[in-house]
Amino acid sequence: MTERSGFGDTSITGIDGAHGILTYRGYRIEDVAEHLGYEATASLLLGGTPPGKPGAPGVGSELRARRGLPENLERVIQALPPDMPPIDGFRTAVSAMGDVARVYPPTVNEALDLIARSPTLVARLHQRAVGSAPRDPDPHLGHVANYLWMLQGPRVAPERIRALERYFVLLADHGISASTFALRIVLSTRSDLASAASAALGTLKGPLHGGAPPEVLEMLDAVGSIDRVEDWVDRTLDQRGRLFGFGHPTYRVEDPRATLLRRYAKEVAAPARYALARRFEEIALDRLARRRPDQPLLTNVDFYGAVLLEGAGLPRELFTATFALARTAGWSAHALEQVAQNRVVRPPERYVGPPTRPWDGPAGNLGA
Ligand code: ACO
Image (tube, rainbow, N blue to C red; front, side, top):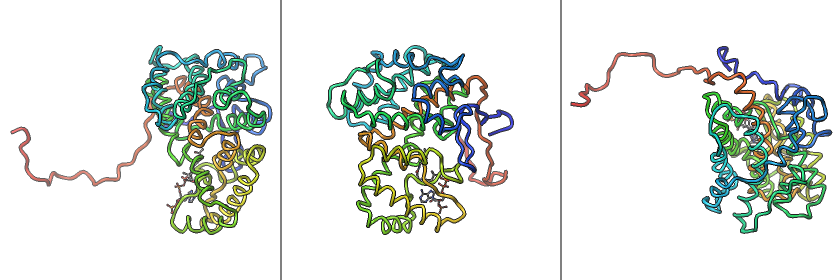
């Protein structure tokens, strides 16, 4: 960002938007999604070395051991209105997560607590909202399988677990996105991880970022059927509306995560939903290209991400919070990277107001 801070240097995730290449610690996202589950991906993001290689941190067992919620977090959950949207409850409770020491700098243990406890927190918030009994986390299950177990009980279809695991891996980090930027700004002032993570959650919540997936389904529901797609898309664009799940500030070609999610979503989506999504995508890409030939507005991660989340049996109220759960690994890695090279972040600004001028307002006599 500025010469002074060197802000923007990161060695976690590489994004080549011109060629559609995304890497975690130098490994292409296609290989990561093929070979690693979420715990191993978190390990890679945090430590820079894939699990199994010498020097790789043993993140999986650490995460499984840390899933329980401390008493103060349970009390915070009970104090929240049950109908509060899960992402808001999540953000509020995360502020209380720095229960031991709300101090700078964040430690690896605090980062692991954030990743491990968050699914328990979100599942508790959801169960409270729908009035069902909480299920304690199962330390024998992997991170994502355990999240689905807490939400859906013991009979979760393996294809749902596999699809959601892939979603978590693909969404685990994406460089200095808006929410990660917010997190890094907070830490740059030597504030604590709980404060930084709640800022990140507040930033992710917006519909132009992590709030987009539920909007994608609202959009598909509003369209209703394949024969209405063209008319709906044209009308929406005529009214200067946005098509959720399309466009990205970085990619000039298709985001490689969208390519993978199109495939993974098909494995769990209801066939009629998938067919509607495919037709919508086809028409949306055609119309966006015609209207904005100079600005590639392509399928982004949230379009098939939303279709996948629905296919995995998640209610749409949980979509944004689930996106955030996946991103806790990336946020943690960025938190540790930020404090290792910390300078206060301040964007370059340009004053565009009136030039300095002589006082020409009314004469005043303040305090008289
Ligand atoms: N549908 C229709 N028009 C669009 C879309 C879209 N999806 N995206 C951009 N535009 C139009 C805007 O209306 C704007 O038009 P204007 O110049 O006439 O006002 C123009 O393109 C430029 O828009 P910006 O918001 O400046 O473009 P940018 O590339 O910075 O925005 C963004 C990226 C915010 C993702 C945008 O494409 C968008 O709103 N997409 C829909 C929401 C969405 O899917 N968000 C998830 C993003 S991915 C993520 O966070 C993981």
